[in-house]
Length: 292
Image (cartoon, rainbow, N blue to C red):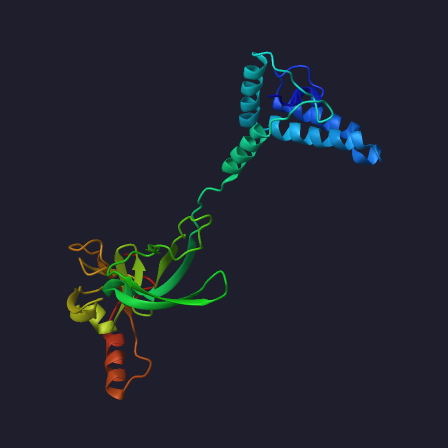
């Protein structure tokens, strides 16, 4: 059997050449025998076919190695090599068939997992503290609305993500679908503000409660508790109630931090006016001159 001498077809004297040298030789040979420069030349048409065939084989490292091995084995037995279809003799198609098969195998696409899709939802502090099931609707990549029911566990952290496996973008070439990642955003409300594991709230008291001290009820996330307000407390000071904040784990919670706000009545009844006037007469307290 005989094979084409692909190196001679490309004008190369040896098989010890780099892929870059093969590309350079191909460009020169293709330019020389280009159909536009050789109109009506049947020989040039055959040459350009051989040049393209040679380049397809030698420009792929794996097929070049296979060609070289077969070439060396054939010429070790004294077989004749032909440089093109214009030479007499048989041409081996088996080798080219194997190359094409190898190329197809090489080009077989690997499975690719689909991309993850990320979104976010907002929930209240109480919803996050107690947990809940929530229905959400999301528009997919095709513009269709998909509805999911997700379980938000009690004590979920702000910014934590819930993963729905396989609900992201579709995979390619048989790859798995991506996931849907839902980030939880915990919103503050008028009553509670979340700062780390601590829950902050405002505690409104009267001027006389602040001056005399008292015990008042205050609402936490899950119950109502009594707290002691010391005599002479000021607006802006805080009362900290341990283990009544947000969940850290199953057995531990942050603190409830109550910020004192002293509220003065906007309107006074006559007896109240007289009491404040009497207090004004007898009290020597002046916050503007107090240096303490």
